[in-house]
Amino acid sequence: METKNIMIVGVGGQGSLLASKLLGHLLLSQGYDVKVSEVHGMSQRGGSVVTYVRYGDHVYSPVIDRGEADFIVSFELLEAARWLPFLKKDGQIVTNTQQIDPMPVITGAVEYPQDLVEKLRSAGAKVDAMNCLKLAKEAGSAKAVNIVLLGRLSHYFDLPQEAWMASLEANVPAKFLEMNKKAFELGKNAV
Image (cartoon, rainbow, N blue to C red; front, side, top):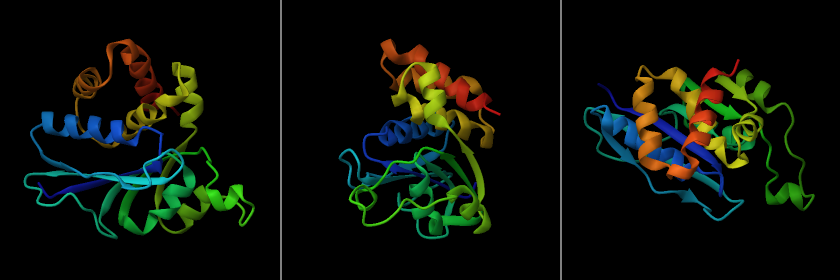
């Protein structure tokens, strides 16, 4: 199998590390060679972050170059736009529609770009956009946006539901497990 590339992008504090850990665990459990990168960017709350998950028969490097990402999983709209040059021509963006103002917007130096989903699509990207924050709150915690996104991402993989649940069980503390399972299902089944 040729190597597949997934970029997980967002803002520090949103749970991208747990998402990449869950995805890596899932893919390893399915027999793939997997490389998960360290976080690149400002990992403190509020800074832009990206992690790479690469899997296939033999993966030699954890780094994804421009134009190589099969998927971009974005926790925030502007981050999806920021990393768009890394998406393959036939790649898929799965994004939360939440907008988190970066420092230049907070200070008034610039305005947050409008109509980003439409701009991403007009640039040729396939975009699956949904309000993951709303679904995470419905599941029981605004912090579950990462799991809602993974639920949505699961649509694009031919992997058994039990494998996704086993990865949640292996990586999420027991006291948060049921809430995270609900978040996954809400993301998976969102219309």
